[in-house]
Image 1 (cartoon, one colour):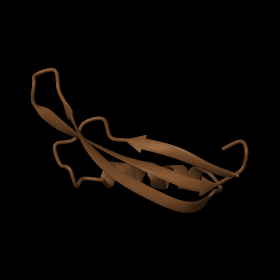
Image 2 (spheres, helix red, strand yellow):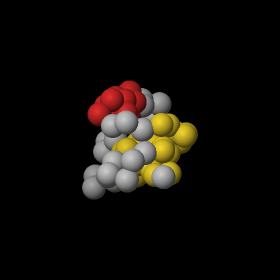
Image 3 (cartoon, one colour):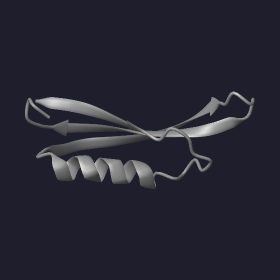
Length: 69
């Protein structure tokens, strides 16, 4: 069965910093017996309460897995 899982870094001041995403994805893959189909990375800007902006990097993991994953 094809499934998806989304990973999001809450706040980052570096738009190219995907290390936290990579670590979260690697942890998920280590803990679950899944086959990776694809990974899509994205970075968006979002306003803060103070009026400035911060980066929101995210990743979408597309994988083949068991029904209980």
